[in-house]
Length: 141
Ligand code: SF4
Ligand SMILES: [Zn+2]
Image 1 (tube, rainbow, N blue to C red):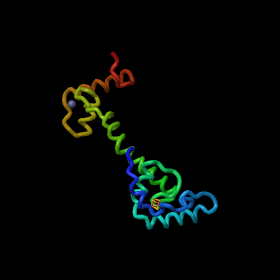
Image 2 (cartoon, helix red, strand yellow):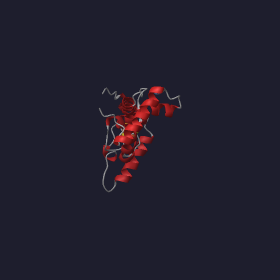
Image 3 (cartoon, rainbow, N blue to C red):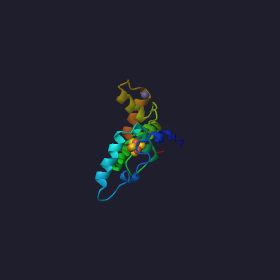
Image 4 (cartoon, helix red, strand yellow):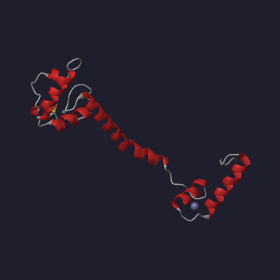
């Protein structure tokens, strides 16, 4: 992953005591708020937030977000990334065009409200008959 960290030069928190940004325990809330006040004035807040999300930072205040907000945001970010990259291909893989002369071809005609062709009608009838005879629509040879 190529990361340009040039934005860090402009960080409002540069040179600051980082404890406020990585606080935990008793005074955490006050310190987190203090850190976020610094972020609010930071010119690179957007880059900082994006960087923290993409690199999976779990701890501390980044881009004006508490670590809880950051985790929440990343959860949405990664689930969106997942749905946009993996889902379409797996959906595509599953959806094979139904061939005519099969029961799924017949169902496709029904779904798409197209005229049911002879082979599909026949296949459906055959499947129905098989179902009555054998309890399954699967063709047995
Ligand atoms: S947004 Fe906050 S944590 Fe990020 S660089 Fe700026 S001051 Fe630092
Ligand atoms: Zn057909």
